[in-house]
Image (cartoon, rainbow, N blue to C red; front, side):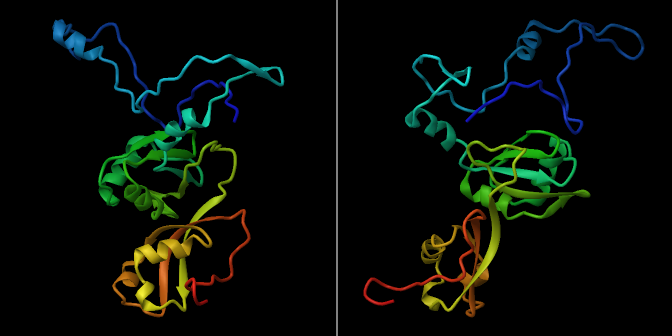
Length: 238
């Protein structure tokens, strides 16, 4: 994996912090000098989102003439695990401001906790949810619009690049020919391993409202050949 240093730029009208040496009223009179407590409070640093991970110093190596820093699997796994519930929102053209997206989520999506929302560039937003259930709720809002700006959702993966097309897509799949007694989340989750990753079952499947097919929401790797069917049986009988 390679990281390239670049200059940070504001996109979509996001707010940037500013600092002013003097504060004045509209009538030209200078405001009252802030108290010591107010000065201290204004200088408190924001709390880091991620908990730090202690790492031992390592030797810098070289690769193709550039410095190379390597991490072990044991070191990098906790970092990636902290983003296991991260989702990308990719807009067709320009994305809305981050504050607009946050307000839209609070008003329209049934999330248990407020996620972290940040801009990756002018079209992509990163949404880090606090749980798998919230991540699934965000993923299920695929092909939606915020205002007149359409977007797609897909799960963030290590090494994600805004310049590459995603290889994982989310979609509803219908499974026909299953015995009704298998219309349970546990069985459907295992059956879906044959072609993707189970996210959720349609409530009308679980309450047996539609016995003709089991409808499940799954993630599918589009790099793999499309599965036309799947065998389901027991160890003694197929």
